[in-house]
Length: 149
Length: 247
Image (tube, rainbow over all chains, first blue to last red; front, side, top):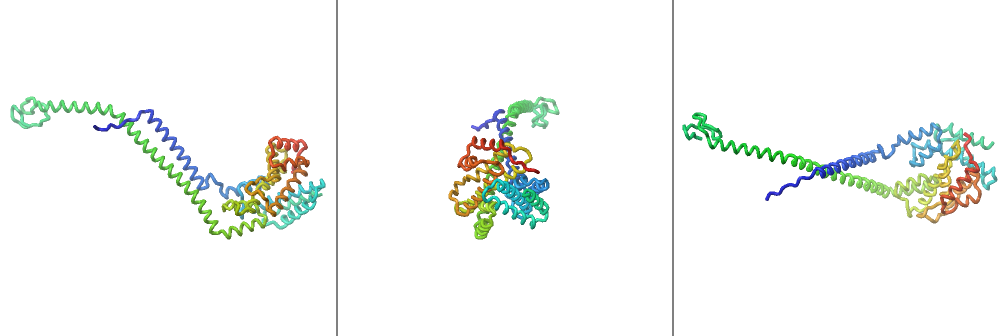
């Protein structure tokens, strides 16, 4: 006896078509995500983008934002030394300000700490590795002197 | 075939002899059978066609599902291989250049470049008990770096601090004053000295810039800071009025 092929019902076909469509969409999404992750188009940020973000903060004098970007993405090395130097100077200025106020309140060891921070800031401002930072670092130093007066 | 009447030759499918007009019974039978066969064919076709279409659609969908399944499996295998091979390549790189990596880590530690030390330990997969002192210091510095950033954001604001800024600041201060690094619980001598420096800085900031009292600092030094305690510290600081940047 000849075996007859069973014909699927319309509802089953519609369900199957939906499953194919859904699986197709998922597959395409996964492919796009994978390709983007591997090529760095979407997943990872490129160095050029990171430098561009740093430059934005640098021009806006948003040193907290700049430091946030540097720490968030662990940015070290030649391309980011310029930004590390300027945020380093800004951090020392804040340390100095803090120790100066602590010294005013009579905290033990605070005057020495303030003097040490000022010396570090002077050393950095007077011999920066990046000429572009010179005026900013001198500005920090001027502010430090003004705080002391 | 030959005509039964005149004996002329003609096609067996003809209904009449083309020469004498005698009826051809074989031809008539053939025509009838042909008409029946054609009717059967059309009936069967009209019945089967929709079923055939559905069978074809089913076949196409089955193929599509199969192809999607294969592509999905290939993608998973590809991603897994890329991840596994990438990781293996990193480890191989570290193994091959072990001496150079060790020297680099030692140099970063000696020079106090703890942020870079953290990054290199992470990149080389060398975070762990084998590099206890480096790993411990990298984690301690990570907390300190967070405090520095929170302090920077706090000191550069021009308006009263938002609750989020204060929460972050208080949280980061607590992390430095009461570090939680269960993987490396015993502080090495040098790391203890460095942590002490960090803690002095946080304490000075708390007292000089936030006006915190010793009791409040003691709360920050507790192992665990509850949400209520944190909220109380934030309110106390805000009530006292915070230091705002002059420019």
